[in-house]
Image 1: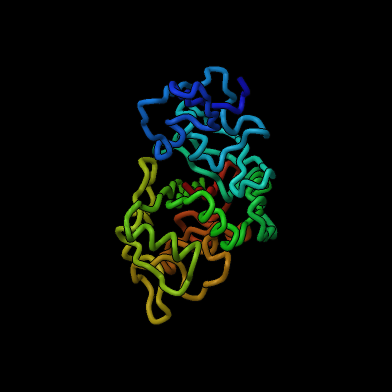
Image 2 (image 1 turned 90 degrees about the vertical axis):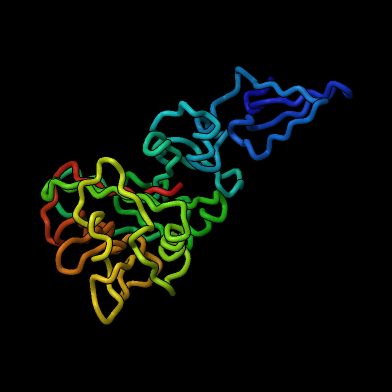
Length: 276
């Protein structure tokens, strides 16, 4: 049986087999019970995303197909174009299935210089460079392909001693936050009620969502993002801030994590942005 065959449907009346590239756990919404069929899984199937010839659509797709998938790199092909590439998948946090789209991991205390802007979705594969930031139009394409509904922000900066770690909720407020950050900057949504803090979060900002953002006339107005930053990289540039007090910034040249914009950097400081 081919390794790409994950399961089969055997018709007891016609004695024919239908080969599937997913199991019913991987695509439960596609599974329909019919009495004339017997469903069987291939015990020798290749694990989705482990080999280039059998990529997943996303980290969530891979996690759904293999619940015991470990944290690490996997192959995905979200555009179904036979042009797969590797991404980092967090298969643990809040049930896993998170696809990494941006990262900076400090290897020293020297401040990064410059960033690499890209409009190509495939550029998320270059997360290890620490400088690549993909335009929101590319992430919108990814959203349309894999139907992600959540964003997750993680950062830790030794000089502040705090962790900022939140994910948007699967509710109308969370959806509005994702829409603003990824799709349209016309309406800046309220922050409070749109996210939840993860267990390791001990940040000032997550506990003070009513102080976020500005609206050109005032600050501390319970808003995502910066009214002066509506471009295609707004997801990275002060998506969360309390003016004059605390900032989260994923721009490699202006990194900040729940502290001042001038806080010192050190080896091990980390910024990560995921979608699911």
